[in-house]
Image (tube, rainbow, N blue to C red):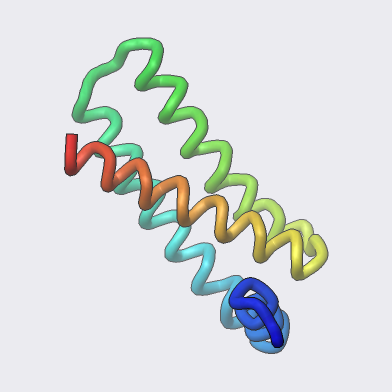
Length: 95
């Protein structure tokens, strides 16, 4: 029995080009929304560190696609990037 992660990873590898292109678009859009939400809160050190985290994670995913890293590494970075942005967005919407 395959786990959800293995199933998604296999689907990502099978359609790598389409998924990586869509991943760059989604990661960049969610990252920019998260950045906007963070900057709306202020510019203290904690917000700037949070903003730096979002920028680094999103750029790491984009760089991994452009550098041609292994498909599994790109997939894991995509998950980290999207989840970081979504969690940040939800945090600033709720609180």
